[in-house]
Length: 318
Ligand code: TXA
Ligand code: MG
Image (cartoon, rainbow, N blue to C red; front, side, top):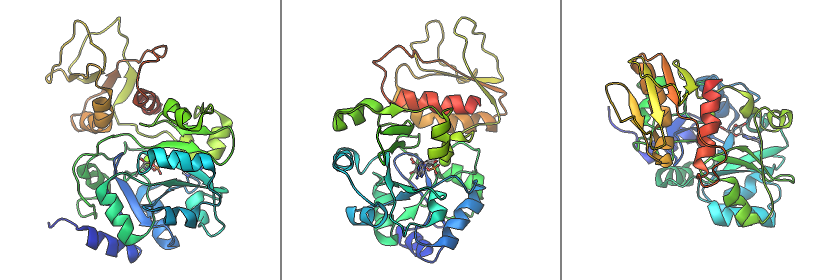
C-alpha cells in the first residue's frame, strides 16, 4: 500500500474524515476542530467517553486566538518558553468553541506540537482535535504499527516512525490560579515554575477537583493485558512469563532478552520512549506480568519525565 502524503491527509481532514498523525509525544487521531460530525467520528473510532474533553492542536498564534478567550502574560511566557512543544495549556474558551471538544467545560486545551509533519499538516488542514490514536483503554501509540493494530491495517496514518518522547504532553491549567498540572509529562513542575515564578500544583487523579476539571484523568488508561506491578527489589527471581523493566543500576541483574529483562541504567528518556511499546510487546508475547522497578520519590535529582513515568505506570497498575 502506498504511504499517505501530508497533502492527502489534509484533504481527508478537510472533508470531515479522521486521520492519525505523528507528534513528538505520541500519535494523535486528528479531526477538523470546527466540524461536529468529524469530531463525533473521533469518539466513535476510539470508543471514548463523551465527557472526556479533547486537545485542540494548532500551528500558529492566530489559531490560538480563535479558541482561547484571554491570553495572560503568564500564558505568553509559557508559550514563548515551551511552544511548539509537549505542553498543553488550558485557557478559558471562546464561546464559538464546540461543546463536543470541551465536554461542556468553560475551558479549552491547546497545544502546538513540535513535530514537522504535525506542523505542516495543521498549516494545511487548519486546527485539529487530536486525542492519542489508540482505542480507549489501550496504551497510546508511539509507532504507526500501534495505530493499525487498534484501528485496522487500512486506517489512514501519516507515518513517521517512532515518536521521540513516548508519553503524552504535560497538561497545565492556567485558566485559574493556582496553576495546576493535571497530567505530568516531559515538561515538569520546576520547568514551569522557573518561567512563571509562582508555585504550580501537581494534582493527583484521585483528587475530586481534578476529576471534575480534567475528566480524562479519572479513566484507567494505558493498561496492557499483562498484570503490571512495582518490583519488590528484595525479592527478584526472574521467570519466563514476566517482563522486567529496570531503570537503576540493577546490581546483580543484567539485560537478558531471553528472560525479558531490560535495564535502562538511568536513561529515563529511553524508558519513557519505549514504555508503551514494551507494554504492547509483552501482550504480543503472551507474558503474564510486567514488573517495574520503583522510583525513589525522595530523589529530587530525577528528571520530570520520571513523574510522568510514575503517573502512567500507576494507571496501568490500576
Ligand atoms: O501528547 C498529547 O497530548 C497527545 C498528542 C496526540 O498530542 N494527545 C493526548 O490527548 O494525549 P488525549 O485526548 O489522550 O488526552 C487529553 C487530556 C485528557 O486527560 C483530558 O481530560 C485533558 O487532556 N483535557 C482536555 N481538555 C481539557 C480541558 N478543557 N480541561 C481540563 N482537561 C482537559
Ligand atoms: Mg489518550
